[in-house]
Length: 217
Image 1 (cartoon, rainbow, N blue to C red):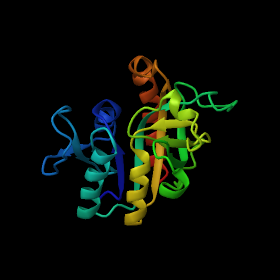
Image 2 (image 1 turned 30 degrees about the vertical axis):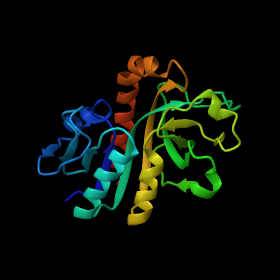
Image 3 (image 1 turned 180 degrees about the vertical axis):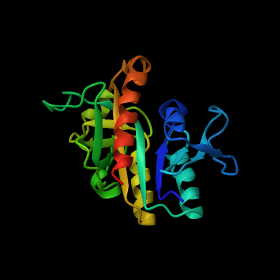
């Protein structure tokens, strides 16, 4: 049985992996993210299992918890899209659209007292030559008004909507967590339009990196 679980938020981010990895859907496994996306669920394979959970932390944590209660995984890999902060916080070599990155540290941006309530979480990384980045997670897209607050984690390079809670969950279960992200947009008012424009090409590069990582295990 597979000992690695790949966790993806949305169909658009993960469906291509089903064919690439020769996965078959396990219809006995039910996720609770509603019917907005018809192909959410668990897909089983020889090299790994793939869980498409639905967007936002509560869906990802609920589905991953159910899996980890039913079957022990030696490691979990979070895979999916992210936005880059670019040079917003003075980073000269920030990730660019189309880049594939490995997350070393998970932070959270939408909590007032980050140091007390949401300490940094450290992730494991595959040795496949990806740029190592810090990712900030929020339950919504960040806004310019967030950036002027003392608590916004300006050390972050990229932003997503699920990783921090998944990191806490994996720590609770004692399962190592990796995260491979592909950059589809710059964080800001044009983010959604850029995502739609760039998701296919960025995702394909992400798929290649993920498969390379799986081959190292």
